[in-house]
Image (cartoon, rainbow, N blue to C red; front, side, top):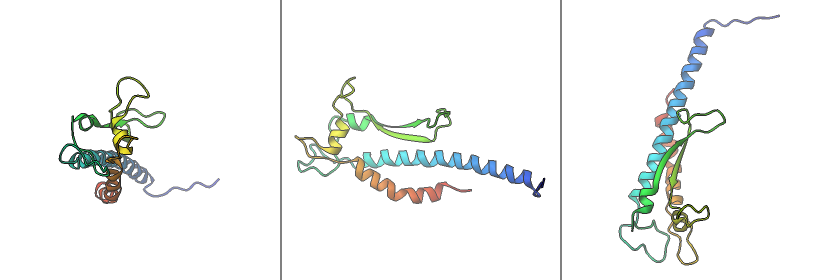
Length: 145
């Protein structure tokens, strides 16, 4: 049997553990900043006056404020043994379902996709395009090993 011992093996494992912890912390930081970016980008780009243009294609205007106030960023556990404190998944939620019905009217979805009566006023798709563009820069700034 051959046994191989590396000089500094203990330090090597300690370094790996330190790197793992830093990556976890920095991942949380990255996800929180992305969630904040998405929410602030949407809120900064609502159409400035009511009503939104009839031709659609622009961010919707703030009318009642229900959609704007329904936007939240939530941390969720992911994985079989995760806890909320150890979560590494962030959700940006739009809770505009009408009532407790599972098939209730979803105002956010109707604006994003349009209906047979109303042209689409997408706000999420253009926001996600912007998020996709800034993600590499944010990752470079956030992840330091």
